[in-house]
Image (cartoon, rainbow, N blue to C red; front, side, top):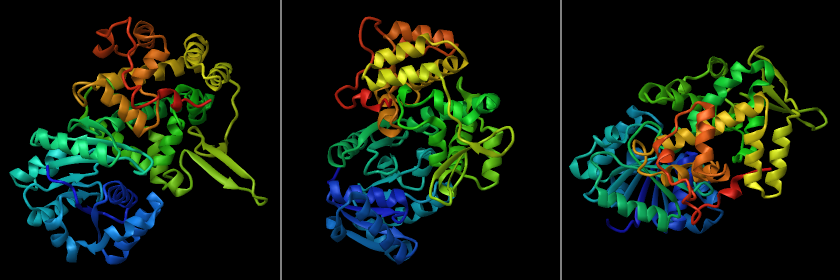
Length: 436
């Protein structure tokens, strides 16, 4: 693979386009053509890119341009063309046809798609172009979220994949996860499975606290920076729907029904209540006349927003206390031995997360380390393999999964019960992801 000295970013004005361009221009020290529909938007992208990496030293390396006037020249000079336009086959395939007209042999082309078929998108190019075509799924914001899922398809050249992965990791500072061309790839497949199943059970238990209860029992003490449904609200209910709808249509594994969007979410989407970006969704925040912040939560049963409740659940307080004392195994012991519906649900969700994370090995990723990296670096969740060790090891975890009536994946059943299961301590300290 030739050195990457010149890069074209298509969709440079979007948050992902600008953020990714900032990383490429700063860490990669590359000249970056910033292309958008019009020059004003392209220049906006440069401003965003500079702001994202907090230095204006990259500004001299960035050249604003438009698709109509500058795409052919930019692509013909580039070593890498990074496409970040709308998540739509029609939009991406149309711009790929334009890229193909000017692409020189050996130039890498990639898409930031979070779930479209990489093989299908590669078909806009000739044989050489298909060999050099990949998914490079950066996470938002790229400067802070260092995960990159490097997605290959049947026509990808293995050596080019290796070289590109090395560049992404060593030059751009990405935590690279190698995934196959499967729906939603690794991180979103695991993460949205759990979040959507939790959303489904929020409806089932709407009379006991619903949305707020689910985030309470899956708080920071279970190894995540943000509650699962708070995460849905943050990324947007429309984005959540797009991902789980895709997974529901194109996957047929044992978790298939957990990808079905809950009816109340569709109702919120239809009303334009998409989450934080629209002002309200699962949660609504407001200020009183005197500036006091107020937080409300969507009541699934009534369709109203109620004051966000406070819960008094003993095991969540005790587990959080253990986390605050850096006693992570102790916190897991609290969860394992607690009684009551809330504890049962917490154990079920932890078991499901471990089970599904490890079940995608083979189909989506080659090994469990790639699944672990996807969740640690992409979602700020303690990786499944690390939870196995915190729970007491392989044997105790298998018992937890069996009691929760979720499948025991072969990665667990065949593992040595006398050895630690987690293998990523050299790149990720899972303990840092727990929150008291």
